[in-house]
Length: 200
Image (cartoon, rainbow, N blue to C red):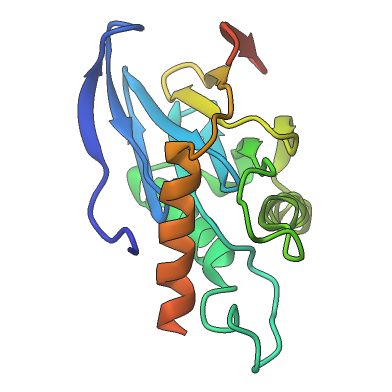
């Protein structure tokens, strides 16, 4: 299924903070305390931050933004990465952020999807987001991409800090099921302990 609902808030009992969970196909930006969180497998999440206004946001996309051949099953949805980036940027600007000050941290792109060995979704997503940031002149402060482990990410817009937890990949993992269902929906339209990284 394709996620088209708004991100939902919840209380994270482990961190004891209010957080907004971003699912595949969603994005969220805000100013203030709390966190924006997501769980990633092959998907990529970009955390953008304006360090002056302390406005931050996160997206979560499944497919790269590069062009696809018209006969490809990815043709309709391959632009989604571009859409996810532009929607997040525009939302942050609307909140008062200055695009010229944006810095980024990117996560995900693991090789967790079974049955897609000939189309490495995670690698394509990773290549896309790094290329997009270079072309747009957005400074990349840190990254944790590729590999084989799902990740849970908390981004704190008030400080620009990120907390990352690498998760153990189990057989029939729920991250795999979620991403496979989401990927099928798109094509149909066309661990370890807490590790704090990339703190500014």
